[in-house]
Image (cartoon, rainbow, N blue to C red; front, side, top):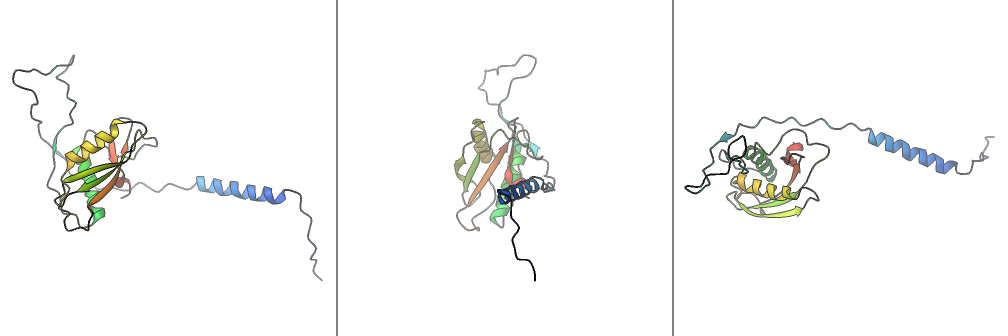
Length: 193
């Protein structure tokens, strides 16, 4: 006849077993490998166009010591005409690529750093022709307050984004901007490709 008698357990043995099990699960979860970075197709080289002089006749811009007049405005870049996106996702990707092309000095394509200066999130509403109708800030960063304004200005400079009137309404794109310590940005959708 088989023995059905239970062996006595030490007090707290069950709690110790579950604590060890939970610790093991946490260790296994922390050691999960990160997915490999996405391979991106190279972007066409932007064409730089000279910015028109913004000074009035007879006014000389203030020069910095040891160099030419300081310019705080970003370099103007001429973008090719946008393609007509076939899907909302294609629209968002095209928008991200145009943002980077229009801002070669203030954007980056490399892997985002582990610590970011600011992460503003914008909801961009478009008109049927791809021009910007309205921008709503969905997330203001706690640090890097000027990052939100830089992202809004970048969206306006890279417009238009292609004919969207054939897509279902509303013509809105939500984009997250990843700002590094040098105040350069990257649209988050480029990391998800």
